[in-house]
Image (cartoon, rainbow, N blue to C red; front, side):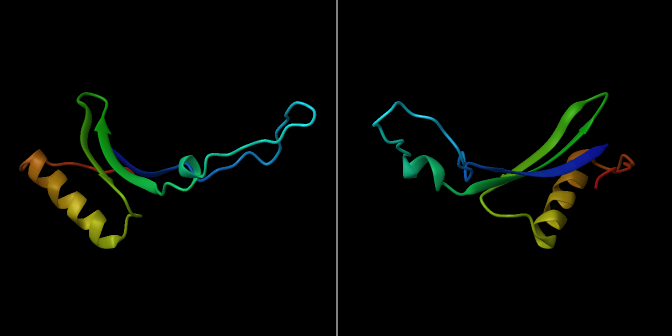
Length: 85
């Protein structure tokens, strides 16, 4: 079983952009400063995605332990081997 965590954010701005002569670029602030989401997911080649957790904050040790407990409950007594970075 493979497991990984990833962060999604919209907090990126193009550093250089082009516009027509005598016009200014505009940026909608609501689209830039929206925070982020963290996702922990596990999958196998045979079963595909098994368990996904999405939250509005970074993943800490307690979040990861809760994820593993939920994964263990989902898998029952079946032995599992996790590969993650």
